[in-house]
Length: 605
Image 1 (cartoon, rainbow, N blue to C red):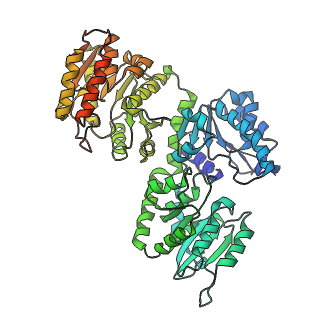
Image 2: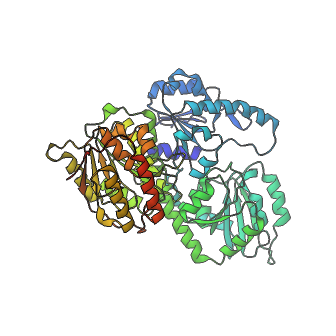
Image 3: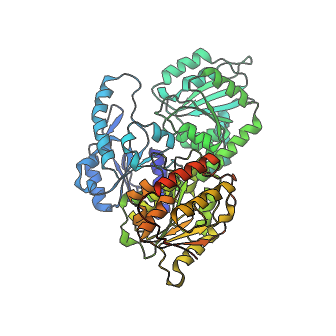
């Protein structure tokens, strides 16, 4: 947490944010004005006790007058904010680094957690937004379950220059290794959940493999005994193949990273919530072996980055085979390492994390409607598993001047939301799946809340040309048009099944449209409250319910031709069989049995 906050605050200030920080520690004369440290008097149940934290927080709020209070948890000093009126008047963003977990019996810890849990829930209840570090951790956290409606996922990040400097001078760590062996490195606090015992047993007796473990902690005596029991010297009497290095400096840590062949992290409990050390290994271009620990962010970091291999938790035999196999997979190690390096620079820098937090701050601060200029426009994109196209789409939108882009990440499993954030879009991720219209309506509601009076909706799968956006806007404004909704139509893409559905739709409703389910639309101010209503949620079925609702409200809807790209997969998601068409016709018939009448509010342009 401390490393991340240090890099984050630096990145935020570089990006022009007036960020200030209050942390535990001994004050240093050279500290800048925006950094304040509070002395820690004691440690109680592994938690720091800083008597002066409340007063320091109150003074920091008076001096800096922040717009948003960003609280990092777990951290018992955060609870002082509950007792300060000046803190309670600010919107809070809670950064959830990990749950507080007890997997081993300890009466004192459980009593302390009883009190901690109630304060923790009070902080979460008071917060405007909660930031989780990965989607798997958010889904597995029972503590966050009641608050998922206000949760966002923003991955952690590191400052690239620290990692980029190290490969230029790896020599200081060379004396640590024995020549001619596969160099396996693991690093972290020597705690019970880190799984170092699995690594020691897996590497025991492996010819041509050397394991170095850097770090200090309570488990050191047990690990020393295990190393003594399992590690052996080779026939030539060289140094043992498994060694504990103890605490190392940042410089030596980076040198070890730069000089190893493989990085291994065998953690076996969700206390390992993310695995920041994995980012360091990836930044150095090292392949990673990690535990496939469900509910932790570790497997997500490595698998979505294609940076290494996931292995069963605590399975010594499988770990042994994987480590031994790494010695023979030189090209594959290089490929994993380069993929991890690219993912780090694309997704896991402190700068990327700082950019992704900006819309979270904006949402917590609650920008009022009057702060938007008349005609302010937001592009809303519902997306589910669109990693292939979403990045390029957002790049093109922003290049064309459409800077307010909102992606509704509809429970994607391929990193769609991360890519969208990286490209500068705002991202909302629902707790439950929404579907295309549900995502669009969520975006419309958000745009209304933020003061936008024009919304363009478009799909994320690469069908819609960004170049066609001016056609929608021109039709909206042409000759003083009072059109409230402009639909972009491209009927030439239709399959025979889709044509059958269109014919039924036009006959049934009397609405003269040629492209039934186009998600490429421009909505003006009068249409937005109608589409954000509960009725629009209940009546919608593949756009038909919303069109009927717009007509019933007396709003003017026009349709203009636009060009569209072919679908990436070439398959209609709605009209892909006679069964789907029949179901569509049955449901639309039921919807149209209302008494709204057939007065058309549609015309061609």
